[in-house]
Amino acid sequence: MRLGINHIFEMYQKGEKISAITAYDYSFGSIVDSVGFPIILVGDSLGQVCLGYDSTVPVTMSDMLMHVKSVVRGSKKSFIVADMPFMSYQPDPSTAIVNAGRLIQEGGAQSVKLEGGTKIAHIVSRIVECGIPVMGHIGLTPQSVNQLGGYQVQGKDKKEKLIEDAKAIENAGAYSIVLELIESDLAKEITQEISIPTIGIGSGPYCSGQIQVIHDVLGLYDGKTYKHTRQYLDLKQSVFEALKRYFDDSNSGDFPSSKESF
Ligand code: KIV
Image (cartoon, rainbow, N blue to C red; front, side, top):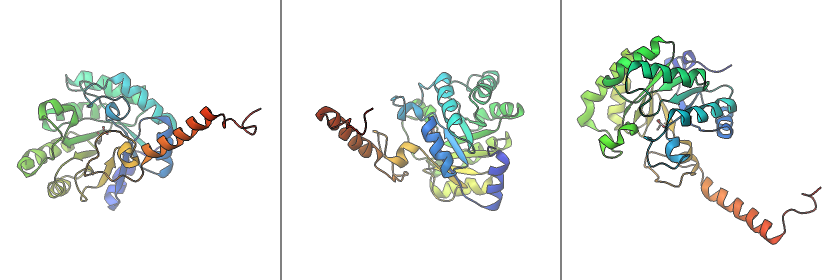
């Protein structure tokens, strides 16, 4: 049986940290689930780490559906959150409801995540009214990179706006909010101002929980490394070394041996 938002809320009420991570396919979905993460996010960060785009902007609903289905098949217990990709919810509430519904009904996710504050609160509330749990996402919102002009930390100058955004998303019925790249003290204040869990990425230690992109944690992505990530493994190097050994063994005729033959 999968966890539900009631479990996430119980953890929050008990003051337990809510640890989340992204996954994008069956194999990693299965490993992350077996570790015990209560939340797996199938993030649109798959645009960069799986599809090789330079932002999340080109990711489509069909990209998301394929990866969500794969993670759902690989996992048993974790609560699966599916990112709504750029332009799948911004145009109007009806478009948003149809696409959120597809991620739940076809994809098998339990929840969707949308980027934005006051401007999308009316869309969040319409999706929630349809019985779909919504996770908000404020602070740095990568789908707006072309408007923001980069991925900057959101500081005190945005304080009033970010608190207003968080409250608007909470009032719209979201069960939690991702705070991305917000200065620690401000993330702490937002966490204290609202009554739903905040899940931080690059937003310091005072959030109700943390989320990381799995490729950053495992050292698998050939892109930038960020100050807010902790790399636990150099998986890219380990994979390279293993593949090089197979390549050399295969080239030299050492593989397959008689033991590996029929
Ligand atoms: O797409 C993603 O991976 C995300 C996280 C950074 C929260 O939205």
